[in-house]
Amino acid sequence: MNTTLPATSSATLAQTVVQNDSSAVAVKASATQTAYALLEQLTVEREVWQDTVYRTSNEHLYALLQKCYQFYTDMCTDTANAKALRQALTDYSNIKSYVFTSATHSLTKIVKCVFGADRRRVSAYSIALRAALSNNVKAQDIPAFINDGGGVEQLRLAKSSTSMTPKQKAAVASDAVADRNLAVVSSKAFAENFDGGKIGMNTVLLGTWQADGSIIVRAVVQNDTVVNAALASFYSTNKSAADAKVAEIKAANDSNARLSAIKTAALTA
Image: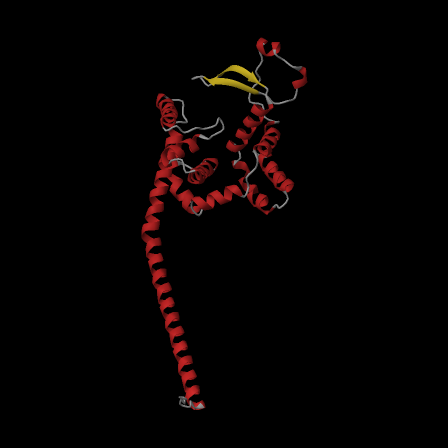
């Protein structure tokens, strides 16, 4: 049996297409409005979060970092209390099984003891506090310093953009200390171990501070690795005078130009 399908006119097909198109446009418009409303709502929630939870969270973080910084400054004096603080930091680190190298800054040790072993977090917080230290910031001004610097992450990025290798720091520091003369130390023991080939070269004297401000020299170290480490340490703790050259350093694309800019600043210290 043959079945005849009803004929569909062109007008009917056209009407169906128009209806489908109108429906698609309506759906698209509705989706757009929904998405727009959602983004508006999320923006409002972000503003509330930024003005409350985020701000409060940062305030608490900066307060903690301020206390870490205060701990450091308190242990940097020649008092019985400062000595106890230094020993407590060492003991606490040992209890927590935190391992540090001889070059690890005490601020980094304090931050790690407080915030745990998250390397990236410890590094960021330590950099922020050491930046404050190099700028002679007082403990009570730490929150303002970090906030004015754009936060911990911005201070970390600013640090990394001008970072140097320990060898580069040692080279800069070697030039920087060449014209300094804090004291002349001589003794028969020095003469007995004197090497004429070392004239004009840097060396490290291992000594102990005394209460009257004098230093008892315990040993002479001439190993290049030790000397370079000492010079790099000197650079790290005496580079505040280089801040005026930071813009030049950031603008320098060539590594030699960058080193030259830093060296110029260091030599003016």
